[in-house]
Image (cartoon, rainbow, N blue to C red; front, side, top):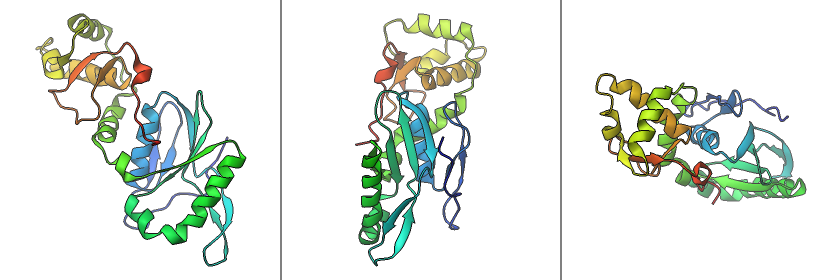
Amino acid sequence: MYSPKRQVRSNGRTVVGLVSSHKNTGVQFESALEEGFLYILTFDREVKNYHSQPVQIPYVTVDGKESLYTPDYLVEYLDRSPVLFEVKSAEWLKENKVQYQSAIDAGKRFAASNGWEYRIVTDKVIRTDYVDNVRFLFRFQDYAIDLSHQVLIEKSLGHSAKSIEALVQLMPDNPSALLSSIWAMIYKKKLSCNLFRKLTMESRVRLSDRPFEMKYPYQL
């Protein structure tokens, strides 16, 4: 078990908080980017567990001073090696490349010495419709899907795809309840849709027969 090696803090411009899911309880973040990254992890079925501020790595700065580097997250997967992640904006990395490179190099060496991988994730893969959609769907992680709703939706879809608006019309007397079941079924991967585009009532969904193939390439 990896307990946080330091507590997150706001610099007055960033948000801090916790994200709790079925995989982990109260994982801390100290920026909107880190929060978005945590939502990605909650939705990735290959992720087993993840830890914030997991280790502190000694390194020597560009000025020759001894310091400690604390990567943002260690992510454990079901069928692959753990990955040590740093979450930063591309602009920040560009502006601080010289000063930060020695910490990154130390992170890579530390990860390799433990049989892990090391990855940097930027806003280019976090500030996306996909992450916005997962953030919205996350609120339905504990929603108890009404079995009658699920049967109605599955029967209507069969092997076809329909818009969410069309499915909601199946229950004109209580469309909001059916809509909640639809959102929960998408989050729980019982329904699939194109999450790379903003979810709307016009989004088309289908029954998900291969939910493990619904992946987001955040490690590229």
